[in-house]
Image 1: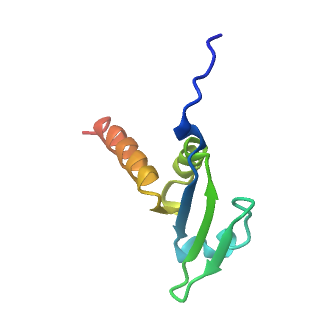
Image 2: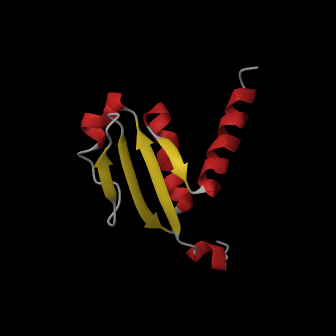
Amino acid sequence: MQDAIITPSAYKSYNFEFSFPKEVAPEAIKKDYYINQHIELREDGTVYVSFKSTQIHEIFNWVLSQGHKVKVLNPPELINMIKREAQRVVQYYI
């Protein structure tokens, strides 16, 4: 087995921010997303969640598993990862 290459970017801390639509707000507000999370019910009925983590790839996979139930607000790196993956999926159906 080949050893994993550890780079400084592997330790980069990201400020993650997500929005859950009001349709899933009752379940979204009750969940634990991350140890240092901040969660709030917004006036428009959506749920806002934020936390810091270095685990961008794991969070990317989690976002994909949520489908339309979550919108990534930050970080831009994760938004771009999601956009690229969505474009790849669309290519299968054109």
